[in-house]
Length: 506
Image (cartoon, rainbow, N blue to C red):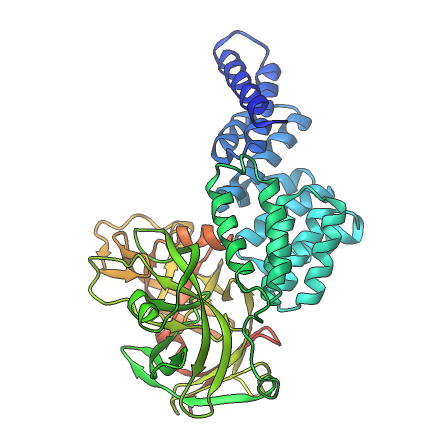
């Protein structure tokens, strides 16, 4: 359907839906119109409006219409990051259709979007055991395998999903994300181009604009090898000293052969980050722009993408990389008390890492040696590295491992799920994140946290607004664990084994 015809069709459906609501017509007729409206709006990329239409159709009293309405609500809610709505409706859906492969796949998608990756993967496997040609289940497995670092298997699953559903735009996007993790930028750009071509209103939508910018950036590398390094360095371990300043791990690094300067080791970031001043001084020219999101009222933030020609990490046992993607913090935030600083994440560079807070040593390598640990937590890296935690005994949530952060925090969504009465007086906090001041941040006392055998009882946590970063990464961030959690241990983040190892200081 062309854009012009679609607009006419949607407009006609809106008129019909309005008439059905107010006119004396059979209720099933009104439900059918809402379902038609929801479908047309969804196909037009107007997901918030399609969600509203499908929610109105939930009043259906027959199973066929109710199934269609609930499917539409869940799919629309996932597109607009209304993860709690999707999860709630999926819970109801699966009770009515416990053996329906399509319903089970959608239920698994809702679990994935809630950060419950292990449960989602189990459901995807169940679906494929009963219905091997279920495209969305193959797509779910592709994302799950990517999060566990099994990129070749992830690509196989995604390509199989594409054969089954070649016009599913999300699958094309996932194929692009896998290729990007593999550092195959040209293949990633082609997959993202397919994604753009399937977007509704592709010539005018923000998603299309941002995706085209990403394609331009990936193709700007040309014949340059992303994250290139000497072959003899690929299996080496690079151990270097660090300083601890204001609960931040600081490493010296060089950009484009310049003098060494401070970089924060920040696993809560998806990319190497430069300030505008540093980029200009060292000849790192912006190529295009991207979307970023973090803690703070700005929410989604447009920043510049660029390429560092050479990046040397550490002054002893130096790790040297070439053609490193980076973000330039331009435009910079104003009215914040500290200057935005340079940072990098070894995880974003494709390396595992060990931080020894007692010896002030950082080790980076493709393959970490096996080490004894007091606790091993399953780790997932899907844009950000996360582990599972349990809040107040039964509320499971996904926590970002953030060496650049300071405290233990939970999201506002997690805080709301606890069902606690609204306190008479909130303990407001001045919290500044990568997206500015979080005006709604507050301290919640008396929280119980558990990470496997690690327990915090009656503990005060910071409550942050993580809606924007959750929407950007595509799943609910339950919270963040930073320096106060990590610094008690020798911390190993092993991407190859997909585990977080914690060994208590002796």
